[in-house]
Image 1 (tube, rainbow, N blue to C red):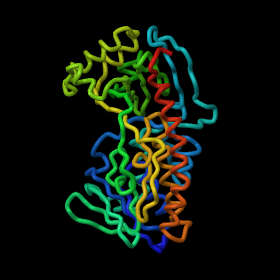
Image 2: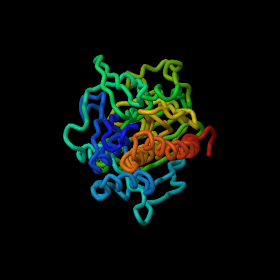
Image 3: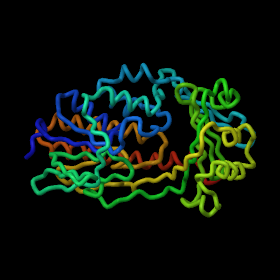
Image 4: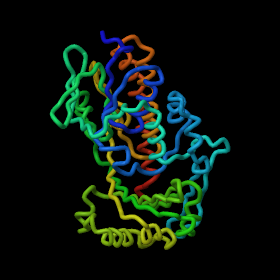
Length: 369
């Protein structure tokens, strides 16, 4: 039986969940190594703004001893939703922010930076691509790297997202397309350069939706607005439409045609962005996604329960990381810790997946609403 106190722990993936797990482990004096395939922390943009919920993301930050630093960066005013009529851009409803600032927003990149800065130097090994894992007969696990090398650990944690290289050691499940695609773009220095759009979006997020089509825009820090054009369409919609995704003018023309009956103030999101269009098909894992316990390996976050991006994923990933770390510092053996963690995480993720699917249907309804 492998002792949890002296365990060799590897986390695959330097996302929010994996970094939270590493931080909490280090808070308790435990050794951990994070392997990340990207070359550096700033190898790619980290995405938009996240609302941190009290019982999940904020609870995880509290366990990591980072809640005060989070609140210094967060934007309570960002917890605001404006729903507009797609045909007139008239305000249909407005919600938040909550009086107690219950779900403040923070840029994903800022949150990841906060977690990275909290770790002991050298914890994250950059440019270390993992190709797979092999559970061993003695309850440990072998980590296989893209350069042909391997290392053995008492526990390998798959925190490597939707297309996890760790997941196949536990489950044959693969993500499936939801039928919804996001096309992302952005606007800079909005209050000065795009003042009418800034007023339309407000301090937080804006949503306008019609049958199978929605426009979502959200405030990020430093005057940036990130916009998502959401459509219900086949995954290969661009091929059927004859649109080259690398041709930004062609994508813009197609989207303007797709939203030709929408209010012109909303179509501003399509006409005048400062950035190109990035195509993001939305995938999910089957729900419930469960597995039989395998010694020496487990999953957290999107690797375990990939859901639509409607506010649950990052929060759950961070809570997963905190819960797994807590089990590893309170249980006597690695195996007992993983079993305790999975007994909490798997039922929780099943419940959350149901709510997340409903959230996507609300965000991009199949019919006018």
